[in-house]
Every structure is written in structure tokens, then in C-alpha cells.
Image (cartoon, rainbow, N blue to C red; front, side, top):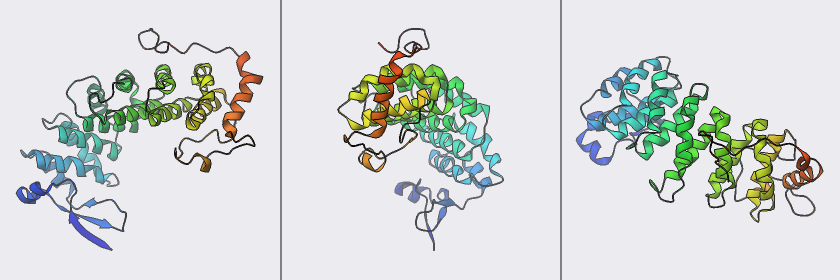
Length: 305
């Protein structure tokens, strides 16, 4: 069944004042994404409108044309929208450029600059970081800025949602795969004051580095004794990946934190098998290994005490 509604990007007041800007969309099926009915040419024209509400609408819905064979026409106006005076336009332009999945060096340069500039909104940073993650092959230059954002730890600063932006930075860093990020990811994981889901993201990020992150092993071994089951599992996931072992359930990169038993098997001692395997490996072999240093950061100074 097809149902026509107004676009979600149009607030009620905007619908009243700018009805011509808010084209209807079609929903196909109960869980389908809205598909804008404006043509690409119409969206390009709206991106040049003097009205920021209309530009915001166009920047948001341009991303729904990811499967359109003519989508490349949207790249130039969306790149221009990254420097729009309106923050909402910039944020949605960043989002749509990622959804279109067309690499453009101008996009990477602008979004990378956002990471170290003041005054960008949470939405801009969040969408920009995610789009950088779409093109990890070309975004290694963003690594220092992503590290900077990830390492901001003050509660409530710059906003209560900033930790979600930090999580996006963690995910993009692990997609880029620059080993200079390893001590910073490790620092987030081993810090007991960090939010549990951020520690989980850092652990999964480290695991993606595989044996390039073997310097992290001595730091996470003590955390195998944590009273928190998921922290023990996180540690074991890192050890399994960084050492090239094949522990039970060792290659999971996602799970439900509230229902670990559905994802990780337990042994007769009620401990998770991946944790027990990590402990046994360390006692039998790991503690006798030679582990490279892991503490220094971009400036050569220690990241990890």
C-alpha cells in the first residue's frame, strides 16, 4: 500500500508558511523510508533558495537519491551547502553526501576541517563524522581531529549528546584503521569512568585492528577480572583479535549488552568461555611474550599512564 504524507523535515510552521517547499513523499510498505517525489533538478534549485527552510529540506532529501543514476548532479550543490550560513543546511548536506556514496575530495577536506573548528553543531559533527567513515580509504588525514573529539571526556560538555559524537568518532577511526589511534582507543576502553557503551565501542574498534593492536594485550589482561561481565567480554574480544587466537565467540562485533547469554556461551564454572579461554592463554603463553609499547600518542607523549 502506498501512502502520501508530508516530509518529516517540514515543521508545522514551515508547512504553513512554506507549503510550496515541502513536497509530498511516498511510503511504500509499512517500514519503508520516505521517497521524495521532487526531481533532482528541483532539489538543486531549492538548494539555492534564499529561504534556509527550503535549503534545509533540499539538503536533507537529496540523500534519498542514492540509487538514482543521475545522483552525481547533486554533489556540487551539496558540497557548496557544506559552507551554507545555516547550520541545519550544513548538517543535512554532510549526511546526504554520505548517503549518495560518491567520493569527492572537497567533501573530505571540508568535513575534516569541522573536526578542529569551533562553532559547529552536534548535528554537523555527527553527520560529518559518519560521512567521513563512508570513505575510510581517503580520510586518514581526519585521524587527528577524530582523536581530538573522541578524547573529550567532560560530562555534559560541549553538550549532553556529545558522547554519541564520540562514539561516531570511534567507529570512523576503526574504519580508517590508522594505527596511531590505537593508544587512544585503548585509553577509552581501560578508563573505568567512561560510559559502558563507549567502552564497548572502543573495544570493538580495537578488535578491528587485529594484530596491529597487540600492544594493548597487557593493558586489558587485568580487566578480565572485572566484576562487570561485558567488560570481561570486551577485554577477551580484544585479546582474541590482537593475538590471532580463535577463542569461542571471539569474532563477534555486536551484541545485546542486556542479554549476553544469548550471544556468548558459558562454561561449567558459569564464566563465559571467551573469558576463560583468554585467562588460560595468558597463563600458559601470553605472559611470557614480548609486547610492544602502546602508550605514546600523536605528539610522542604518553596517552596511557
